[in-house]
Length: 80
Image (cartoon, rainbow, N blue to C red; front, side):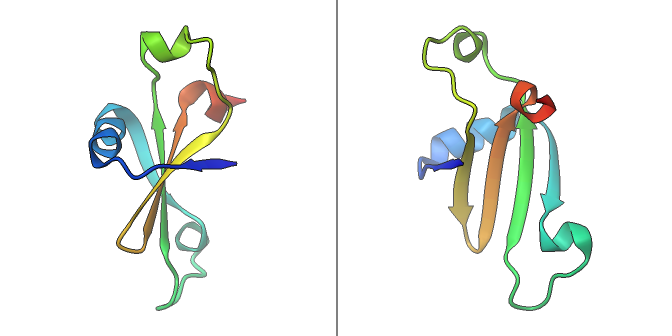
């Protein structure tokens, strides 16, 4: 399940701390066409505070911008 957010500053910070970004979905499989949206998966290393928070989550975060879905997952959940 993706948790949608619209905070531009949080979006930019998650992009900044990401260690990898890759196009996924139809673009990854080569099945995209002119009507396809873009999906980009970002893998980030969570902060010390996030790792030790009582409010841990197994969900991904999603930010939509100009037909692009930016999906963020921390490296530990990605590896699970």
